[in-house]
Image 1: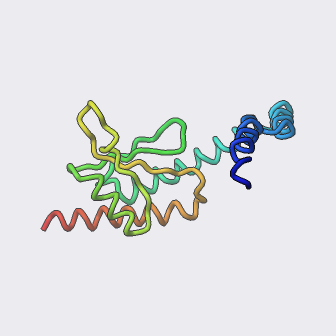
Image 2: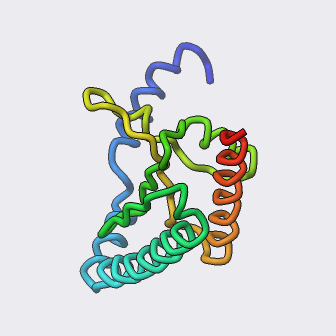
Length: 150
């Protein structure tokens, strides 16, 4: 692009990219009007509920002595509160080393006293991956508990 035309082309690009193309808008509108979006939402709610239930059951069964699982009514994440005043950030790091991604929630507290817990996502994961991940997390928690008792 010649430097003299850069501002003009940038301005045109800005104006043309402000809204999605009309064709995409029409397709999405038809998708919604024909009920496909509502059906998609129903399928996703069912899938997420199943994933949530599998994860919460596996965590309670395998790591219940280390965690209190808060089962949400809806959403794509759940929170498991750590027992015995553990550092959720230490658990987060140890879980990451074991190949499991969790987020310590203590960093999200601003005014209230921080509570130690883990945020775990369950949507978008096939059930056959949720169970091994819960088992790995339980193993991490058990190893940490043993190390703390020495």
